[in-house]
Image 1: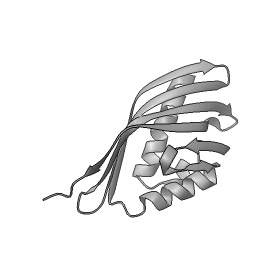
Image 2: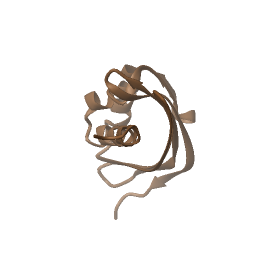
Image 3: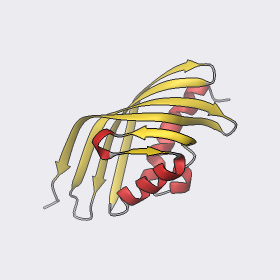
Image 4: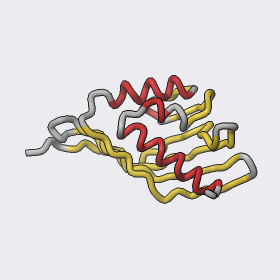
Length: 135
């Protein structure tokens, strides 16, 4: 039997896996129907459908993406939880050029009938850098 903490950590990894493998139906299982995401200058979205549509469009031109999630700190409070997750994301074109976004997600998660889901996420960038094309 898995613990709530394990299920919530798996939720953060499911987000990365869904984007990196282009499984956008899987991505829709990460967020509540009315989830609110705030990625600062990148944008803000409301609802699993809007979030999924944006992520699909934002990564459509990428040849490769790699979202590495780590250092998940989970604080449980019954059927709710707060989670901080470090993210190091590479979004690369066919020539190897692209963007490296490093920062952290602060999430509010809720237990639903379908398991844990993220109801609110804020992305705080620590470093945003360009990646040069391969020689």
